[in-house]
Image 1 (cartoon, rainbow, N blue to C red):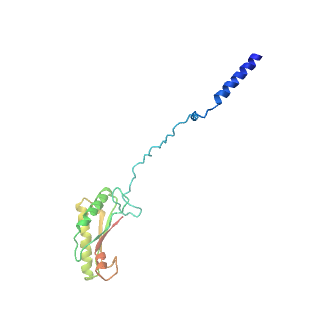
Image 2: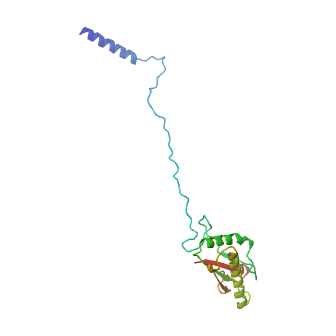
Image 3: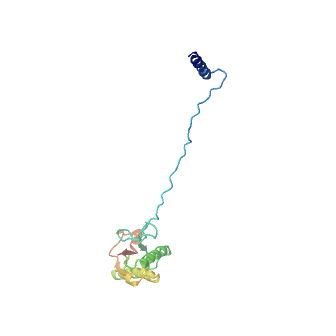
Length: 177
């Protein structure tokens, strides 16, 4: 039993000696098992390419591959039925849409400003609509997809009585069906 007590005292002395610190030793930081945080970013979700419809809910045509509407109104100079060079690109897009959608048709309305006689303005409105029709058919659109009507000066876009108003009234408008 004395042996056991002696052994206990020795063990206690060793433990206390191991826990004792001296002023000259540097503090030892405790070792901990830590795992470096790794940020895992999930992969980007795979998004299927967005399907664009050629028409909006009101049958207005969109630029191919976008949701932007194509212009459907084309303006003319005074007493003229000549298509502007700036309008050719959008008219070509209309032709493409109509060729790709043979079940769709378009009505082309010809309009004029209030200057000139009623008969003259009806004829000029018809020439403006016919210019647009001719362009579309030369680009491969079936003539059966195109109707024309001239309103002359009867349906002004702008009822004003000055050049800016008249310029807005000299137009051809495409209406899809």
